[in-house]
Picture (tube, rainbow, N blue to C red):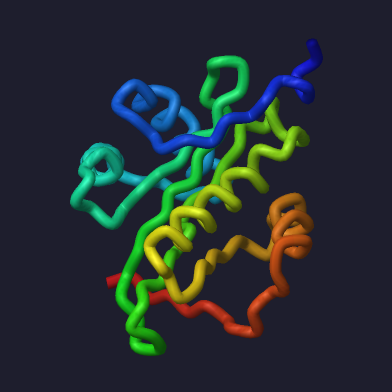
Length: 152
């Protein structure tokens, strides 16, 4: 059976996924030329596992191996009484790309947002991330908003 014929399963991250999630999260941050301090990574993982937290994660599993993840969170909005769903991080192991895992992860986040009666789901990526943008452009039109960030 070829890799592309093995079913990709999307499911909530669980305690057994920590090592895989950490490995992929580190690869994700390396791609974006970012660094997240270990205490923050540990805190994020703890929040993902906390059922009371609005920070969640889905994993993509293929052949019993975690090959990707989507970290997302819910937050209040001033434009609706319903929450927004922010898809903050999405990554699929480069060796496992091309099998639809990223699209399935986004669809999984959409399902979670619908279950929470969210107002909308949104995400962003770097301009140079052409492979991701080519997928995102098939899912929804690009926003006209420009993001400004100022570290505090």
